[in-house]
Length: 270
Image (cartoon, one colour):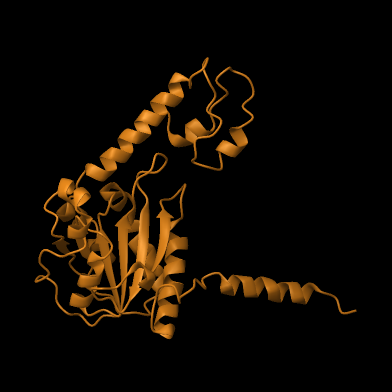
C-alpha cells in the first residue's frame, strides 16, 4: 500500500502523463483519481479503504496515559497528572459527548496559581497525541522563552475540549492550553488542535476560546509555527484580559512590520 505522499505523485492510471501530479503534491485531497472503465482504479479504491480504516482505528484506539506520561519527563514540567471524564470507555465517549466534558474526579489536582496550564487530551484521535504532543509541548516551551510559570501537565482521557475548563479552574491557572486529538478524516488521522482559554472555568463556550488546528508535520502545521501563534495569543489574552472572538492572532505582525520597514528603506526619494 502506498503512503499518502506516494499516492499524490503516482502516475496516471493509463500510464500516460499525469496532468494532476503537480497539484496533487500540494494537497492531501483526493483529486485526479483516474478511472478504470466506468469505475475508479482498484488502487484508488484500496487507498480509500485504507484511509477509512486508519481513521476508524485512530478514533477507537485508547490512549495509554501512563506510558505517554513517561514520554513527558524530559520536559522538566513536573510529574504529569492523569484524569478522566465521566465517559467510562471509548464507546460511551463517542455516544455521549456531554460526559466527555465533565470530570470524573479532580482530587489529584492541586491549585498551582501558575500562569499557564497545559492539558493534553486524547479527544477523537489518541494516535495524534502519541505522534505529536511531545514535540508540540517542547515547541511551546521554546516559544514561551521562560516568561511564564507553567503548571505540571495534565493528561485527560475520554476528553472533550470543555473538560479543560474544570481542570483549569482546579489548577488555578490564568490561561489554559488544551492540546487535543482532532477528528480524523480520510486524509489525516493524526492531527492535533490547540484550544486556548483565558481565565478558564466551567461554563465557558467556544466563543471564549481561540483554536489552532491541523497540527501534524510534515503535511500540516509545524510545531514551531503553532507554538509561535499560541505564544502570541497568550500574550494578547493577558493584555486584553480575555480570549475568544475578541482576541486576534498577532504572531505575524512583527514580520509584516519588518517587511514594510524594509520596503520604505528601498524607496528612493523623489
